Length: 286
Image (cartoon, rainbow, N blue to C red; front, side, top):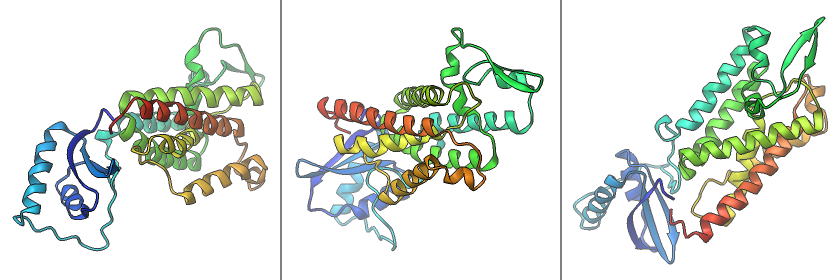
């Protein structure tokens, strides 16, 4: 992976938990994985590679004593916390989603809302009327920023920050942005294809796309340690099935853009196959 740099290779038998703990304490963003019978330590910044090597030699020579405080846990691939400096694209998407929510929540002029809906929107005698896209291709993306309630924006933002931040650490900023664009278009077009000209929006289609990508891609590129726990997959897929079955609407959560969710999930999974496969075949070493 281009955003990380080789710092160290050691035998697979060595316990690098103390070293990883020391690096975390010193703010060194790093990843540790097994490759060819060795453990590989990668760092986010090239200028930190020599520092890691010096710390390792000093530790092995007994010049450094590292105490691991329980219940410290080894997290080799992704930093414990996601900081905005390493996930600026994800942060920008969250902020734009909040702006889309405020557009609805603060009852902004309907002409403003019409600029970001999938199709141009106007109200005639209080009833919504949709026009044609007419080359306004930004509309293929912008509905993902619209949110229609507090729960909608809060949960989508939390999931986007968690899943998107981890994916961005692995893919880099530009690739994360392109991944977002493709999933957004797929989810929005899917919803329009199945639901017709209606007012819809939300980042949940992209969230499900990131979920699909995060689940599938690591099977093809094991160095991308972004796979969510099975409990998260069960929770989110279970929620998706409940939405499709109509249970969520019966509970009073309003209409759900199920086609956007399914389209996003499948689109993200396909991108996981494509990008993960290309990375593996291309010999990506991070």
